[in-house]
Image (cartoon, rainbow, N blue to C red; front, side, top):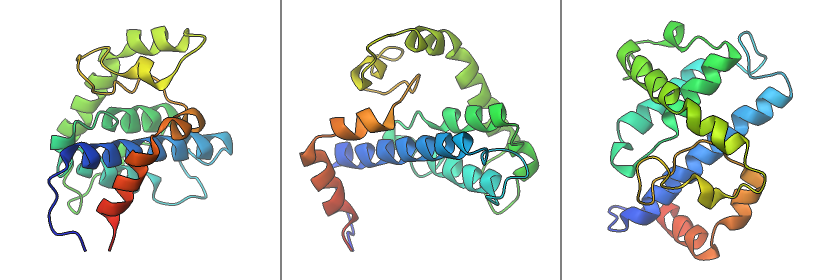
Length: 162
């Protein structure tokens, strides 16, 4: 098991991959009418809150920007995260409110990237905050998985080695 890590960039890439996988799973569930209240997939709300707890808590130093996208997708699907809150998950109504404000602040960015014809993952980096932080206005998992450098994937594999 890995006991320490001095490669923060690789850990941040793993957190970004987690976000991409989460949002992709939500889209796939939506395509099959399973990302909704009363879905055959049980506990979507509480699982989402556990991911949000990680994004806001343990992962806060990793520049995770996909947390508000989880809230946005749940809100759009009618999944009431407020009703799913419980003491076992360290995430509050105030945290949900803040993430809702985050995605509402991004409304113009969503529109701009939706209109882009030849969108690529690089178009979603640094638009709002500058630097190399991802904005999460748009994603395309098929395209993005092909874009990951083999070196990044190998480094992520080493960090996850048991």
